[in-house]
Amino acid sequence: MRLELVCEGLLAFFAGLLLLPYAATGGSAGEMQFQVHLVWATDDAKPPEGKDYKPLEPDIRKQIKALKWKNYFEVRHINFSLQPATNKKVAISDKCSIDVKDLGNSNLEVVLIGKGKEVARVKQVLRKGEILVPAGDAPNETAWLAILQRVQ
Amino acid sequence: MHYEDQLKVQAYLDGELPEAESREMANRLARDQSAVALLTELRQTREAVVGFENDLRLPESREFYWSKIKGQIERLEPPEVRPPVPLIARLSRWLVPAAGVALLFLLVRLGIPAPETSSIETALADPGAMIYHDYSAGATFVWLSYPADQEIADEDELGTFE
Image (cartoon, rainbow over all chains, first blue to last red; front, side, top):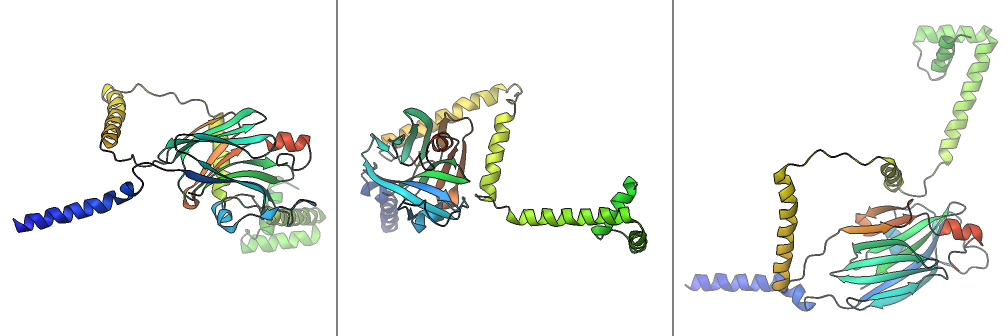
């Protein structure tokens, strides 16, 4: 009898440990925080004359190791947050914007808009620290990247 | 010079001739100007090609590069004609997702959030676009032909950004 009680107690303890993460978040995701880094990829050593572009953060550079340009210059970066089950449209340039919608459980719908038209729509899980990178080739063997990073 | 002889000159240059034939070719080169000319041309071509290869460098990883080519090939391939599916397989197509939905419903009812999945859905207006996942780095790339090609070409070098 006592042994059964001990076993039941242990089971309850481990079950509690397993459910602790869910309890801590209340069973639903809270506000998410993002950064969008607009980046110019090039083999040139310096940004164009007159442009004060900074080198991309080393941590993000590691995440884009699949790309082999020599240098990545951050043109600008934008911080924004997203409430659960809402969407937010963020302008990344005069002509391009990105619309991020929370679909729940870290699922996001990301729409890239160029010149007022939808260019790409991606639905995927983006966990903390992960990045989604709409990108494309640019003249002179360079490239542009719009790195959407989930910060929180 | 005959075609076979030309091939022998090439093999001589590559060091692929047996010893006896190699000696024979060396003797021939001492007296045959056309063979010498061909050997010189082949050697220069090889040096030029080797030098050119050294300058080649992909701006992306091998896996990324080949996934772009794979995506282009897949777009060109005609749709696959599928054989008729047996009844059990057709039923299981419905039963398996239905079981999944039932499980999700149960999890929701129990107040446990559904596990995160790594599925991805895309709708790309750009026919030249491709997607590449680098799971080890937690990165997903959506490589588009838009908008830099159009906008930057039309305007200043970094017109897309400003």
